[in-house]
Image 1 (cartoon, rainbow, N blue to C red):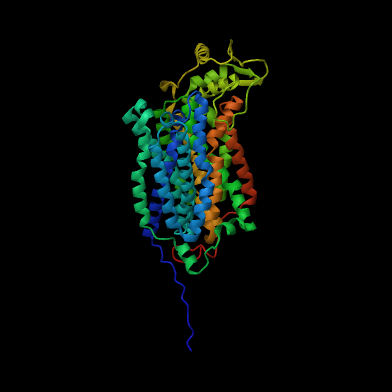
Image 2 (cartoon, helix red, strand yellow):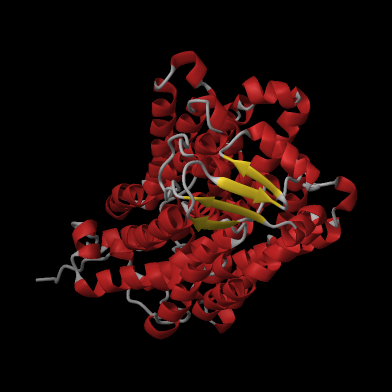
Length: 543
């Protein structure tokens, strides 16, 4: 009797042309998704007055930043939901779902009534749409990175996935360009009233393009092979986080890789732009153009460091970026102040401003309007980029000194007059900005981003097995970027208010970067060249 032979179907080989199409399609769709997500962050300065109660400028702006952070807060939950689906059903269809959710939620923001039109329902609806965006993005990145990596041969895995790493910066860059064009087209006054909606509504067009492209893709070879051999996970969540060894890798990758990567990323792009506009009072057009130039110059280095990680390893490139950032952030931002607004730098160095009060409160996650004179004074000074010394004491209302002038309590007109007498510069003088020097500093900040971000996708993908890869890599990535990174602008701003030092917000990313440097150096393995039993290259051969 003849013996029956069972032939296990193998995935089709991936041609170089198909490999390039996978990179292009995945990257382009992810660019659009990041564009959708970062529109809000770029326009947060407008949303404070549009969707939150008026009465306190600082509280409204902090509330808008907190809403921005809400989208980041739910990203790990999106990673769990869609990571599980991706490991069970496949990579392709899962990140098709996420991009549809992102596009619909973003267009919805563009259609929202404001607080003045429907009251408290406006911020509730805004937060709801931000949560949907965060859930969608929580499932998008892991799917795209895993999909590209599973089409790539091991010798090019860092290089191929580095194109995905450019998408966050390109999406941010695209959002800046679209906003700049819209503001120029509508004018500042009209943009503040209704023109801000246009960039959100444009996302419908981008959504259609992204869905069309992704529908033409095939499932990843590694996933097809795994399913054909019956090796798929039955319960990805339990296998990812119920297994002690895998859970250890999840936690180590969070604290030893993604947390530091995240704060370097958000400091180099988002906080730098925020600092230019809100602290240094640089005109928004000038700030957008300078950071756009820096992004354009630095973006190729994402691919360079991805390529380099295929040759010398991934871990130490990431950790070197964290080290450089931690050591140089303070001096770089000091230099940024001198280059972008030398008059403000001189004012802060020569004019002594003190606040003495006994009614100050710690306002880290408190977005209600400031009611005490101390909080009102500190909010006022912080929004004008003024460093001050703060001390407890006295009785009654806060006592503020600006040079030889003493001010009791808080009256904005009196403060404006006192600052004018002390030669405070209300805005950065375009004629005094050293544009080349500012762009160079911004380039250095983004260069650090390319070091930590270029190799991170390949590193995380290689750290976990195919059967639970989508779930396992997505959670630490989105806790790192969603929580450690996403709340950075808000936390840094709150730290500045609490301390009176316009550079104190940088202590947060510095501490996190140092933590990642220590944990990553001593506890995480290098993954470059790792041989696994389920990570095949484009020819079907093991790495």
